[in-house]
Image 1: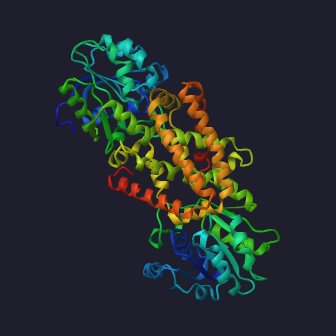
Image 2: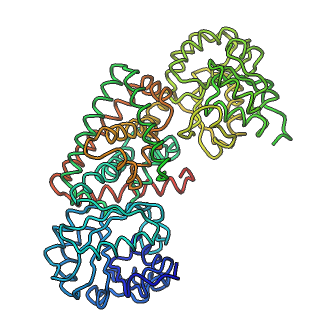
Image 3: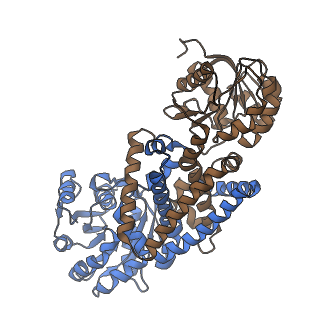
Length: 296
Length: 296
């Protein structure tokens, strides 16, 4: 990998959590840049990143962190993006690329777009990868390997800058797809945001039950529940911000889901076995598609 | 394991799918019986079981399959239990133990109980274990290892018979718990049946979307959706029968879930970030409990 020249000179990662620290580890592993530094509000996170040896410098002074970087990657929760845009974007020199890894893409253009100076290239991105673990210790260089990364460059974005960001993700082993931000937000509402919302809900419902003790819920979780708990253990702040920032698409998708659930509820109440079996047979085919696409 | 004497002389497994074929494989692996045979309506399944060498005999004549067995384990979908009870129970000799692996337990007493002759011991059971795969090829001997098996013996059940069935599951590596059938059905409604219902629903919702193509849903499934598709790939007939046979508990639990989901929907609509974050933080604790209990 390192036989080819690094894509960037100095990458600044803002927010050294699961995704940020995975990217930091990917820098030497896949020859992404000569140097990688990070900025994080948390002193503990900075100290941990230095201790792990995954960044050359780490500072809580975010403005200092982006100084001299030719690529800045925002890896903080989306709720901070407006502030990040306001504080950091004006400091970037012409030619710098500013990207992010947020799970909602229209909000990036809305929150950061207005602060980006002429000559700085804002290329929003979203690696569709993750685990239920958080923090700098949780990252690993191969997290993006074989996964998709979606870029949503605004109209008129610099083609070379788009290609450089795409190249970074490809070196991480990702497949890159480019699409409109609004379409991204609708697709992810169903493939990611709604599943998380539902997992959080059902785990909450279970923990509130009076008759069934928490210990029973835990003991007998192998019957299906445990798969939901894994998703419902994802970072609370990150996910709060996802729902607040993709409200329209999430609520619309949730409405469709609720209608389908009500129809199924009715089928159970009236004993319509054929209807249940038909749906359960149809959903198997989707699983097969995911296995065939090596996303299982 | 085989240093200790087998628990049974001849075990007859009716239905040689995922669970039945895992039990058949467990018989020699854990010294459960001298002989294991199976009965299955499907000629192909019988032929496959013989070809795999996991049973000594296999027949589509279910009455013949139970002849001479001192333990009969029903592993067919629950919708067949009334018929199985009527056909097979009267043929069993006094002292024979009849058990099952169905996911709903009140229905076993209702459907099979009336057909059980004096001296035959009906000890319903439910191993809380499984995968999304089906059929005789899908089984493996260690499936029940480290998992829970719940027994719901009816009032006045023979204590020795209960202990023998518990012993069989313990040899398979399971932890055994005994409880009332009605309580079982309520606990499993939340830990297993509702998660499956919701997974089936969301996968169905996704596959019906017009704007988002099926290929996009598959591509970007790593964002959370793929975990649901695994569950939604479970056996359609088995699950149809679970919902039809645990209707009351499933509908009641579904009602609680729907209320919680509506509250969350409202929090998203009104931008109540604190409320979202509070729930998302609380659900993390449940996950930790499952990991600590080694059920993850």
